[in-house]
Image (cartoon, rainbow, N blue to C red; front, top):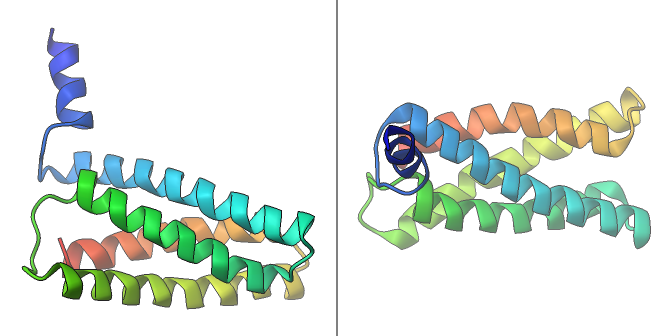
Length: 140
């Protein structure tokens, strides 16, 4: 019974517990990253679109998924009452992350000659930490 209660708390109960939010944000990030990586791979490898252009489209789709899941599942308390303003700030943080992502992709792929998907993995880890901290501090 205690295990079921714990799973209910971790997976579905509204909570402001930081460790549970971090766990949920990690799960949301895995889902949005899977979308991002899949689109990046398909556009670059299968459709022959340059990886930096593909990365922009892939990142935007991941950003939309991340926002929707974050609002629905991760962060229940909000610092802002306006959903529009919240989405704008969430997107601005995401766009800053996208700029950082593009820079890191270029450095790791063109300068250090890593495979672009490995470069994206490195940039995703760095971006996760920075974006979580900013979104938690500013928005939620």
